[in-house]
Image 1 (cartoon, rainbow, N blue to C red):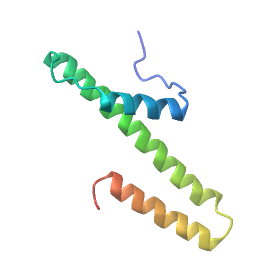
Image 2 (cartoon, rainbow, N blue to C red):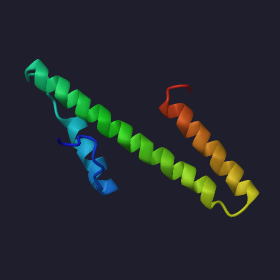
Image 3 (cartoon, one colour):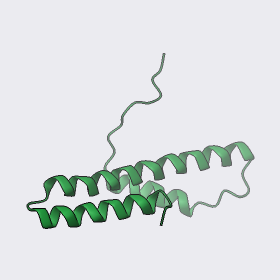
Length: 88
């Protein structure tokens, strides 16, 4: 059986290029099944990018050298998390 949830290491610049390319492609004339697949792929890639951005913001909290920078990093992380979840 094939594991469809394998982890694949992709360089971040490549991930950003793929997302940008997909956003620029106009698929209005394609059959609905292709548009659904396209939208699903773009959705998953965007979610992955957001997860990576949140992970990086969280790692800044862990790597902070003092309490002030840790507090500032935590505030930035929480703001970013709220923004990505659509709370702000």
